[in-house]
Length: 406
Image 1 (cartoon, rainbow, N blue to C red):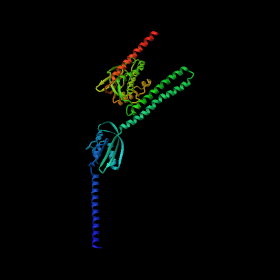
Image 2: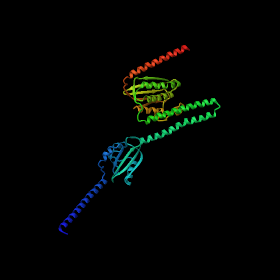
Image 3: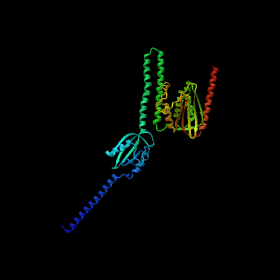
Image 4: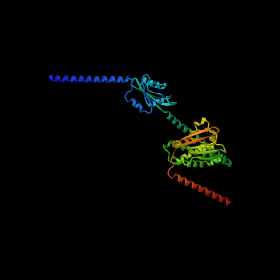
């Protein structure tokens, strides 16, 4: 082998040895870096920024269980940097992950921090190296409550519909067996009509409530005159009030306006009036008052009825809940009226409040955001009043002529 060839061979061998040495040094540094990261208790770069952007409660813990980084939402459960994780169940979850590796998810009911009642959470723990663990806590209490409400709604609806349907079926059989007794047939037929009316009212209210809860927005939003809402509600329940011997009165501010769906508001105020009439004694008075407080319109319906106990006040807006179950069923109550009032008011950006004392009466107040009267509203209102007076005068003259003819 010639000298040039030997030189080239030696150069190649040197290059191979040099490259191998460089790769060995790089590998050694990398292994050392990985080992340092795995045994370090410092939070990796970027993790803190990720935690700050999270809506869920999350934290990073070291091997001793101390919180070394936490999201803002973690404070809801009393988790703060520099403190040890208090909750025993969460500590066990993290300890299991550190022992077995991988990640683990569990559903727990925990309290702590700013939470006033036990919260149902989905907690997930994962390893972050040899010394760190990541814990993410997601509050699923509201989801559980909604699922329970859906289940209860289906169960209650089925139960409530079953009663009038079964009654109609039994009454139909009774009519068939009493076909030769016209008096009994008329009695059973009247009861069927009553049960059919109750069934129609129940299905109608279920549809109204479902529509208010499912729709993203109101079907028709426009300026609504509260004077017209109150007048329509009183007119719709005048016959019921007369039959019950209850006087209806209207007072308070005039000319107030809100934005929303007039038909929904009429139904809401009407439900309050219907309840007030049902639970008022004969000879008493039910009043509807309108008051403007700052930028809020308050529509209050007051009665002198039996009132509501403190135990029932917290639940009266629940679907199918009846403070006086026996009386509600006897008077045809569905237990949905106040729930409709609540959801209708919320859809208009307002709230409903209640004051009541057993034996003294109740006052339900719908509070809605006030708007300025639209242009031309005053003129239209005056025209309506003139037309109403004109019709009333014509009716009086017609009644007088009828009296003369008789």
